[in-house]
Picture 1 (cartoon, rainbow, N blue to C red):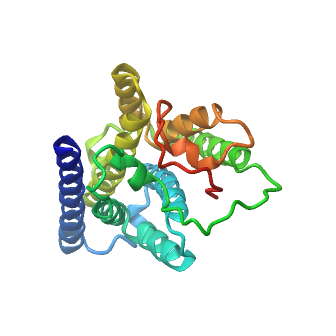
Picture 2 (picture 1 turned 90 degrees about the vertical axis):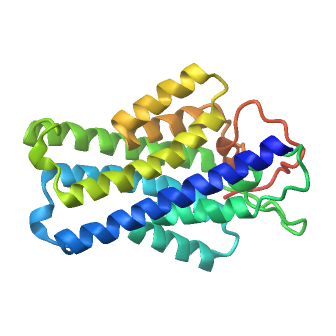
Length: 250
């Protein structure tokens, strides 16, 4: 129990600090370099970075939309996510960890963070489409779009490892991007049972961003049948928690 409480508190603190770091970065960049809504900032590599950033945002937004039973609160969180990026990601994760109950030390807190709270009055709807198949196609398309963007940007503007590309707003965007990467990396670490494969995926995530995110999601969706509930992709493959009740997640 003590280990579980320590883990929950450590993750709360980590994402609170990361959120404050991004807020400080945003305020500092606005005060030193002005508004980001300027045409000259939209270089080829900035455009590619923004596409990369927002594909990861879409992934996180899909989880937020699932978690929020109320569509109004879900829409509000997603709007904040689009506008403020990783600040919203961190705030949302901290809120979810504060909802974790410490009364049952046997339950994995990640279940409570990742899964929507299920009410007994909820009923499973008859589905005419497979959300697993839709998600496979959707994230495959996003991954291909990111790969095409990466290849085109390299062909048009060369490699990104150049000092002149690191403008103040590019640096702020990268901080924003990699804080979201930290959140996704924790989910990958939870999903993977082997530390070797976990390390490999995280290295790929750091190097290739949302391309790796999409590949990871599609790979795990491929392990589900077309009739499985989509929420199973959130859980690790060795889960056996009795708190999970079969319900229609999307």
